[in-house]
Length: 222
Image: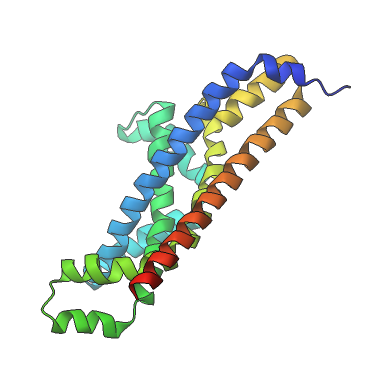
């Protein structure tokens, strides 16, 4: 069996379409997860023991179960409770909720990394809780949470391949279908690995650039 790149070249428009679906689902899911995760982390820190316990339990359940199981339950189990979703909206919701659980832990650790003295100083200056969070805690923890946040985004990119199970026409599903139709399994796996590797490398480099820029900005203000 010979490696035939022509099979992949002929299917580039289809691969491009699958790549577009993967990228927008991933970016939207990560952004939604960041926002939801920050809200959850903030609520757990300042919402009292009951709120912390309830949200903490939800987060642990989401982090303790595979993404594949969660997607199956949402897509195939949703109709039993009146929730009927098409594959793409289901994938977006699932990826957002799953990422929010992990990002909430990233931000929770970020809050804990801010020195207590800085928060107390803000209180002495008469700052409100919102001012303390927005002007003291969030800027200080930004440099700390950025590396794990980027690493988590990379993990979520690879987790997005699971969405092919519920027939989301993303990159993995598209390339796998091409491989099956053309009996070009080696070519399909190869191009799939290359594309994911390129996206991961670009994300990692952009993350490092952002980290260096934020670090210089922080020390220039010090």
